[in-house]
Length: 194
Ligand code: GAR
Image 1: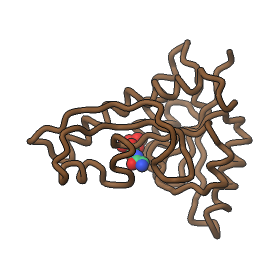
Image 2 (image 1 turned 90 degrees about the vertical axis):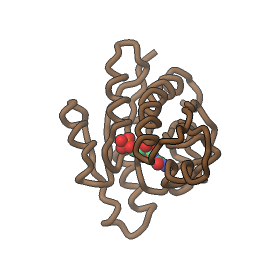
Image 3 (image 1 turned 135 degrees about the vertical axis):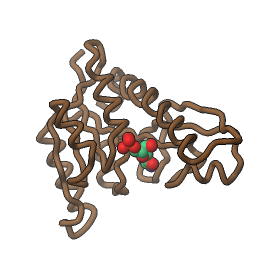
Image 4 (image 1 turned 180 degrees about the horizontal axis):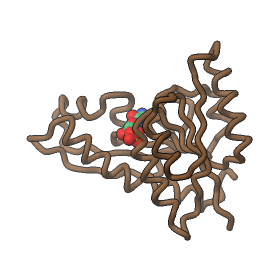
């Protein structure tokens, strides 16, 4: 079976992107990272991707009149690059139902919480504030509703009394870097949606 061509969409640091790039170097990994696309020119992840020899693209959401115009440009870039699967990895733009429909069952996201709990931003701070004992991360298919959609993989970790937002976030991120490559491999190896 030929390897699926993957685009990773980022807005910043790109550490999950880095984990996906590393995993995809494995000869039997079922996906190739064909493109990294950012809506921010200054995203550190763009530099990391370039130095790993991966094609990069920058689509500036600020120059478009509306969300769909921006997304139509992204869609063209994805089509030109013959992308099969889109991975959102810290891509901080809400996506329209139109764009989500283009990638039905072919777009996945990583979220730093155990969905369906703690959708949205500042998950680590909210977990600490609530005194929750368990936290974690989730990879899921993207649907129009934010941070929803069928769950592919999750990883949970204990919350310690001495945890701060930084220590908790760092332990969750370690788990993100483990489950995202596994989840992408599962999706790429299945024929669902292709
Ligand atoms: C990650 O923790 C990811 O789960 C989160 O942004 C961070 C990006 O870090 N995504 C979301 O909050 C989306 N709802 P990275 O750029 O180093 O991968």
